Structure formats: C-alpha cells, structure tokens
Amino acid sequence: MDNFTFWSPTLFEFGKGSEEKTGELIRLFGGSKVLVHFGGGSVKRNGVLARVEDSLCKAGLPFVELGGVKPNPRSGLVYEGIALCRKENVDFILAVGGGSVIDSAKAIAIGVPYTGDFWDFYSGKAAVKSSLPIGTVLTIAAAGSEGSAGSVITQEETNLKRAAGNECMRPKFSVLNPAFTCTLPAYQTACGITDIMAHVCERYFTNTRHVETTDRLCEAVLKAVIEEAPKVLANPNDYEARANILWAGTIAHNDLCGVGRTQDWNSHDIEHELSGLYDVAHGAGLSVIMPAWMQHVYQHDIPRFAQFAVRVWGCDMHFDDPEATAKEGIARFRAFLTAIGMPATFSDIGAKAEDIPILVKNLGVTEEKPRAGFMQLAPHDVEAIYRLAL
Ligand code: NZQ
Ligand code: ZN
Image 1 (cartoon, rainbow, N blue to C red):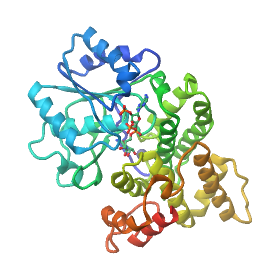
Image 2 (image 1 turned 30 degrees about the vertical axis):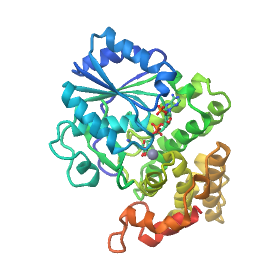
Image 3 (image 1 turned 90 degrees about the vertical axis):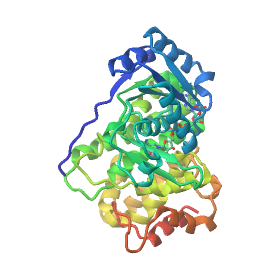
Image 4 (image 1 turned 120 degrees about the vertical axis):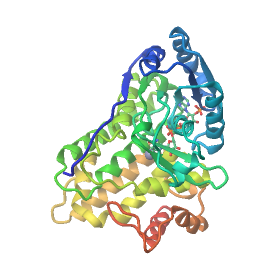
C-alpha cells in the first residue's frame, strides 16, 4: 500500500427531512449571504427548492437565485454566477441538484476570489488556491461531487470538457435525502448507477499491490449497487434502495475506496471527450467506454480482472484458464449495463466513428506523452478503445 493523506471533511446530513438543516449548516460554516444555484427546473417541479429555501428563511439567511445549469455544465453560466456573487456580496454557495449543478457551483466558488479568467483552472494555466465555501443539497446519486474536491466544466466555444480540483473545493456539507432522488427518470437513475460503478472501477484497477482493504471496500460498493439497482429501477419510490445507492455514490468518489493505491481515470477522460462533443449524459458515455477500456487493457493484469470477475460478479474461477474468467467478468459487467438500460455503442449515443481522430486529438495524448494509469495509453490505444466501442 502507498503512503497517503486522507482529508475528507465534508459533513453529510443524511435522511428524510435532512434538508430542514440546510440553513443551520450554512450558518455553522460561516455563510451570511447565499447564492442558491440549481438546474433546469426539476427542483422547482418536485418542491425540493422550496423546502430548501424555507430552511434558509428560517435561519434568517438572505439569498439570490441562479438557475439554468445544464447537464455537462457550461462556462457561460459560471461567468454569470461569478458576476452575480460579486455584485451581491455572496459569501456562501449552495448547490441544489446533481453533479452538474454542484460542479458549476464549485467553478463559481473558485472564480469569485480569482482576478483572472476562471477557465485558467480548467485549462491548467493556473492552480486553484482559494474558494468560497460551498454546500450541496443532492438530488441524484451519480457524480459524487457532493463529497469530491473536483469539478468538471465544458467550455462553450470549444466543447472541451475539463476538470479542476483542489481540497478547498470539497463541499463543507452535503444534505442527502434519498427521497429527493425518487423523481429521477429511470434512464437518469441508470446513468448515475453507471457513473458510481465507474468511479469504483477507476480505483479498483490499480498497479499497487497489497491493497486488500480498499479492494474489499470497492467490491462491497459494487456488490451493493448491483443488488440495489434493479430494485430502484423496478420501484422508483423504494426509499431504502434509493438510500443505499445514494450513499454508495458518495463513498465511491470521496476517495475512501481509492487511498493508498494508484488510480486510473483514463475511461473518465476518454468519456469526457464524448460528453463534451455530443452532450450525452456522462454515465451513458461511460457505459460505452468503460467495458471497451476493460477489453483493451485486461491482459495487462489478468489476475486482477479475474478477481473482479469472481468477487464482484460471482463468476467461477477457471484455474486452468484465468483469462476466460477475466473475460467473463467483463461480459457480465456489459450485460448488467444493458440490463439497466444503458447504451453499449457509439451509435447508441449518437457518436460518430469519423470523429474518433478529433476525440483522440482533443484528449491531448501523444506518442511522446502517453497517458499514465493502470496501463499506459498511447494515441493508438485510445483510438482502439473508441473503436472497440463502435
Ligand atoms: O437540470 P434539472 O432539471 O435539475 O434535471 C437534471 C438533469 O437533467 C436531472 N435531475 C437531477 N436530479 C433530479 C433530476 N430529475 C428529476 N428528479 C431529480 N431528483 O438529471 C439530469 C442530470 O443531472 P446532472 O447533474 O447532470 O447529473 P450527474 O449528477 O450525473 O452529473 C453529471 C456531471 O458531473 C460530472 C460529469 O462529467 C457531468 O458533467 N462529474 C463530476 C465529478 C466530480 N465533480 O467529482 C466526477 C464525475 O466523474 C463526473 O465527471
Ligand atoms: Zn464519473
């Protein structure tokens, strides 16, 4: 196991009625004027926004609203949010929604104290040094941004989707009421489930040895999700199954499962090019890319893929042919994604084979500078992964 620092200080308020504490929590973390940031309207339709704002009023907190965050959040609204916060002297940002809203809130939060263009943090031109505090009220189990130190934004002019991260961007608190996720459509629920599984897989496929504790944590999260997913899809109002998936989504990405080991993240970056260019849901893009990545790299460490097959998917171990076991695990993962209604190919998500050179180029990988990870990826590897997804 590698040395590590684990500092994940987000306060999680979990359960029915937890949103009633929102105002109190903002006060606890020093907020006195709030930007309430939200998406395209689901939180208005299902009453979540009204309940949260009621809590702010009870805590005597003045606030301004900025809605309209789109899935795969864009830079344009971030600029608007930064200007609004400065004008209104906002000192705390509250995201009410999913990963897109939270990521947009994080971008605004780091943009307000910065004198340059906030995109500098996403283009790699500048490192994040400070942020306004943020809190979240989560409405979808998926991205894990409610407990993560990262944010992903798409630049409007270029369609480049890029990440920025720093410990100061981790939410001070996150309110997780599983009942809020019951209004999610089945497709969006399944996209979230796929993303959660991908966050675990990005950590599970490692070159670090002797990481049994985190291996077992990863396997537990995956097995719980595999068990609970059919229940929420069959009955969207199954509170207990929603609760299990919601917590799985958070611990899949606050790095509890990833400390002390090298991590991969190539599937994510390869996917971000797809959701940047075609504006598909991140989870749907991952459903297409992650099994293709597995197919391309499994020979790098057949025993690890065989372990994944046996421990996560319950495959029999073929001791005389571990490769067959490894392949069976990948096949079961694919079959699971299909069973929950996720896409499998480029054409399922409207992506085009002729765009593959653009996708590879946008990723910025070169022969001289291959991508690090579980297995190093040169441009021809990335191209092969996209082609395996056709
Ligand atoms: O915009 P509204 O109307 O709210 O509708 C949203 C949106 O259309 C809807 N929705 C959310 N909660 C709902 C609901 N509809 C009904 N009832 C509810 N309770 O769901 C749609 C998708 O929302 P979005 O926030 O985009 O989903 P998700 O949480 O999957 O976030 C995806 C974004 O997170 C990024 C992705 O790249 C993508 O841009 N990621 C962020 C990460 C991070 N910051 O740590 C890590 C992830 O790997 C990921 O890259
Ligand atoms: Zn993800």
